[in-house]
Length: 221
Length: 221
DNA sequence: GCAAAAGTGTTACTTTTACACCCATGC
DNA sequence: GCATGGGTGTAAAAGTAACACTTTTGC
Image 1 (cartoon, each protein chain N blue to C red):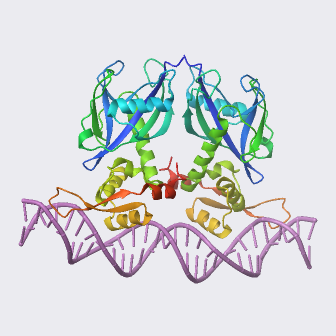
Image 2: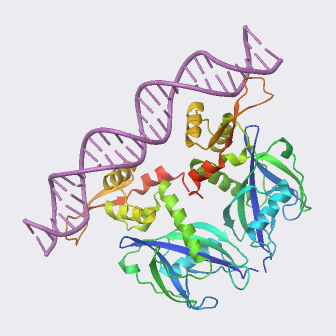
Image 3: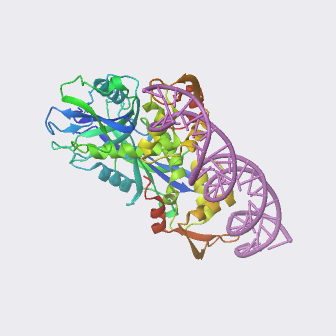
C-alpha cells in the first residue's frame, strides 16, 4: 500500500523577463501556511505520469504541458512523519496574461502564485533543493535541446526568445550572435506578422517549424 | 510502510574492449531463474543511497563506486504483484581480471555475470528498458563530463581510454584527435611508467590529476 | 524629433575534423 | 625482419565570440 508516494512539480513559466516558478500555499499540516511546490499523493491505481498530469491540471488548468522526470527523493528525514518518497518532475508552460492569475481547484492548498526563481520565499520540506536541481537541469538542457520554446507562445519574437535564454542562463547574450545561431538551426519559420501595440518598431514574429525541429533534435532526450 | 520500494543498479564495467553490465540470476519468484539487474528492497530505516551502496557491495564486493541516480519507475504493470516502485541507479566500476568473477553474497540470487551491453539475455521486469536508459545517459554524459575514467584502473594508456569512449559511443574515433583533446584538458598526468607484458611497443601510462580534474569539471553534475 | 527597440556583417579566434607515416618492441 | 600497436602534425572547415551603427515606429 502506497500512502507515502507523492509527486512534486516544478512548473516553470516566463513572464516580464523573469523565469518564474509556481508555488502553492499549503492548507494542511505539516508546513501549514508555508509555500511549497504543487504536489500530492499518487493514487494506488494511478500511473505516476497520470498523477503528474492531474497535478499540473489542478494547478494550472492546462493539459499537454511539457514535462520530464527530475529525480526521486526518499530521505528518511525529509518529512516529519517519516519517509515520504517523492518523485519530482519539472514542467515548462506558456505563461501569458490570462494564466498569470491561478486559482487552485483543490482544498489542500489555499492559493497559488508565481515567484521569480531568484526571489523565493522559504519553502516546505526540501522543495528549495528540488527547485535548484531543476534549474541546473534546465540550464544544462537548453545547451543541447531547445526546450526554451515550451515557455513561449506559439508566435514570438527573437528578442523574446533571447530573453528566455538569458533568464535561464542568468547572463546576457550577444544579440547578433544569438539570432544568427537560432536562424541557422533552420527550424524557425519566419512569419509575415509583426508585434502589435508597441510604441517602437514592431518586431517580426516567428514560430517553430515542428517538423524540422524534431528532425534536428529527435535523438535528444 | 514501504514494502514496495526497491533499488535497481545498472553496474557498468569495461573489459576486453566491451562495455559490460552486471546481471544476476534470480532465485525468487516472480521471474525465478531469469537474469535481472542487481537490486533489492530498501529497508524502512535505511537511506536510499545506503541501500544502493549495500546492493553494490553485495554484488561486487566493492565500496566507493561511482554512482548516480537515473530514474524512478513506478508503472502499475511492471510487477505482477502490483506497483513496485523502483529507483534505478547507474554505477561505473573498474573491472579488472580479479573482479570479473563475481560471487554474490545473498540468497535471493544464484549467480552474477557480466554481459556485453549489446548481447543481453532476456531480462526480468522492465530491466531492459532501464539498461537502455542508462546507456543513453552514459552516452550523453561522456560528452560533457569525463566519467570514462571511472571505468579504468588508476593507471591506463591513452588507447585504453579511447577504447572506453568508443565502446560507450558505439563508434570509432580518430586516434590523433582523441589524444590531442584529452591531453589538452590538462588533467592527465603523464607517468614515466609503461605497459608491461605486451609483445609490441609498450604504451605510456597516465593517471588522472584529480585536483585539476575537479577544477575543470566541478560545475557539472 | 526623440525615445525605444529592431535589425544587420565582418573579423579574429577557437574547436573540430580529416588524414598517413615512422617508431619501438617482442618474438 | 616482421608483426603489432604506439606515437606524432598540419591544413581545412566549422563554430563561437567580439563588436557598433542604421532603421522603423509611436508618440
